[in-house]
Image 1 (cartoon, rainbow, N blue to C red):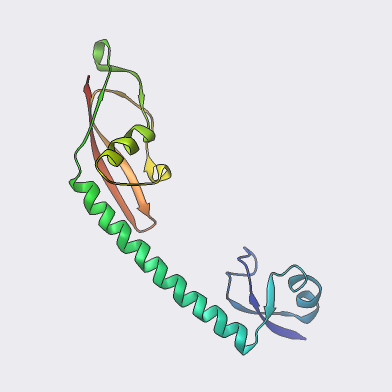
Image 2 (image 1 turned 30 degrees about the horizontal axis):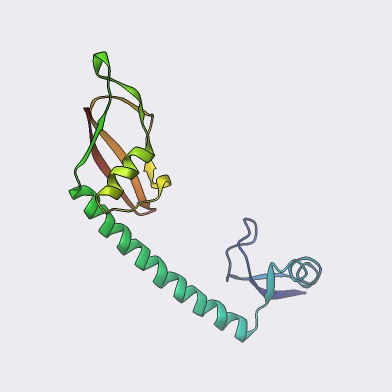
Length: 149
């Protein structure tokens, strides 16, 4: 006999948290319920997960709007790093994501280090493009100018 349950956590084989699925009663009683992976699909449980889903969607929309605003600020922000360099325009060391973050923070823009994606460390003077992923739907390319100190 199959019963309906609400998943309490994400599972790659079963589905996402809050999703209602049909499983055999033995599987639910012997595995899902004891491991707290699901609970019976009662009206109260469904209402709780609907409220949680609504709250999560509202939070996601807010994060998206914040990411878009940050992308606009990043496009307008001039990025210029002054670093020591030797002959042939080669830097002593390399520009890392932390260097870029420090420059942005000096301008009042706060980002997570993981949002800055360098294909490879920048080791030469000049103008470079740096990819910055602020949100799964929002990416921006920063224009970074590296000059000799």
